[in-house]
Image 1: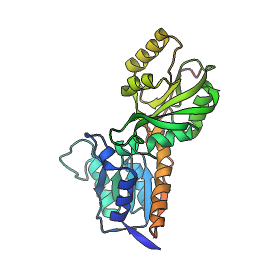
Image 2: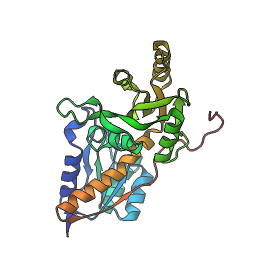
Image 3: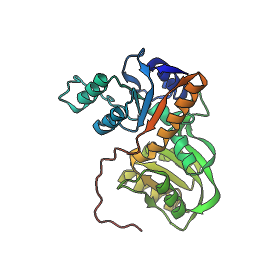
Image 4: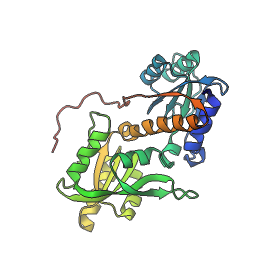
Length: 283
């Protein structure tokens, strides 16, 4: 088998997660690296933190694929005495490229939303907010549980498919209620409550739910009758982590079909900023 170049690996990633699906404000694609350089080992992580970068380098990665951008907002320096500059310098010195698939991976078929939905066992999936020119792509997914289970059982299932964090799974709703129709959005999802209500789901699974949007959503659900949708709120990075394994498998599979071999490694950790949780209630 042949070995990949960075250009060939990026071409596959761009096919899997089309750049035109990204939001206008996003910063995606190749961040650092020579397109002509060989790529034999590809690491995957949610965030390009100093620790995740070092772990990828220790493994011997030629390419690190991440979900969240390192340089989302403009910077005026990548000097090594800044943390973002230090990351760039470490990667360049080690000959490891950096590639970002963010909102394009959120919206793409087989991307972040599908990974979360299928991890929960949802079937008959469709986008929550379809892309204008690709009805099979778009933000979030809506699907069904078969068989019907309780909200508590779904929360337990969700906790089991995500990497552990101190955030855990927060629940808003009747734990004993039976649920079937579910909407999921990886990452911050409280801007999509209108679409969730239009979808008529029993449960909304997402991350980063702020007090006011979540409380208003629950108050409205109770006022309208039935109290649905219930809410399951998880760590931002944990909600997107399941995609990494799928992305790694897809990249290796497509390249193998072209006669190109790469090794892949998925970072098992998530860069959740919270390091402990004291007090609170669990039920």
